[in-house]
Length: 134
Image (cartoon, rainbow, N blue to C red; front, side, top):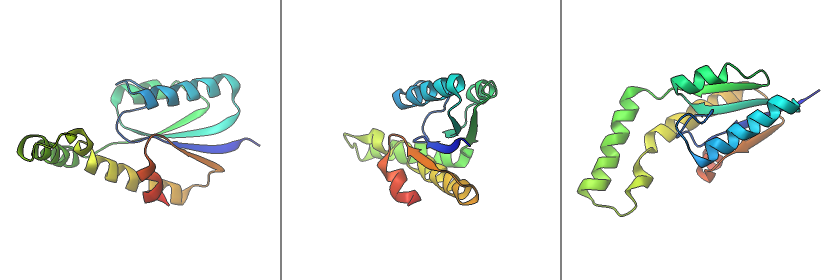
């Protein structure tokens, strides 16, 4: 029996990597290899993107769990970002860009993980996700 493996992305950009992203491209490469080799039962947790969802339907050995961020969360994130970028004038204001989206993403992934068993989990690119899911 194949092992069940969950890959949890950072929740910024989608996989398949329709909007770019180094880590997202890496995860897409892993899913493409698993399509050829069929070694594990793979589930990828990704932020939602219409084009990525359509591409994800072409995979036979990978399940994509797309998490769609509500518009209100996106708008609040933009307000937070603009506050730190333009009002506070923080040098590293990009670190404030997706705060609420990430919290929403982590919460949704955690709810899904509680209901499903995986043999292994891979958390990509963000150690804060590990601390939140722990």
